[in-house]
Image (tube, rainbow, N blue to C red; front, side, top):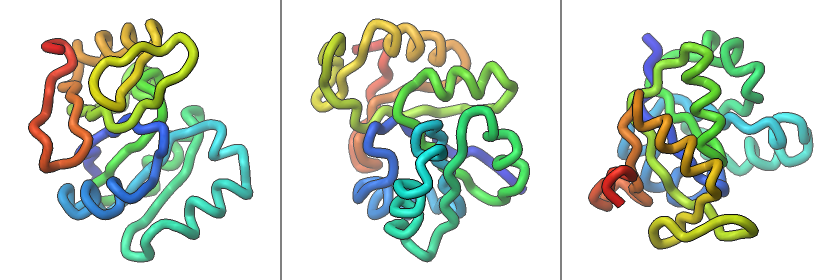
Length: 153
């Protein structure tokens, strides 16, 4: 059996909050990081995979190669991407994503503060609103936080 239990938007990808809080909370078997840049950088990909806990299967893939990666995994899956457009693209390809949470999205040029440490560009906000048509989209930094639906912020 294969099930995407959560999709997380976090520009840090795999880090302490994900490893210590989200993976155990979700009882995830597999983490799939969907990031073209990371997938195309063998050194950073190796560092990411080496730093990951040995108790969980971690995959790194590009958006274009996601379906090939996805069909080769089983169990409870946590997806992670840096920007919402990645999940919008996957949904447009027919991938079923029921719930998306926003973690960290740092500040930068053309980004405005949405909530605490979450900053979005106009394009990212438009993507989040589109995603909310087909998935529950919440801000939830860690599992202990109360989810805040982005359409209500």
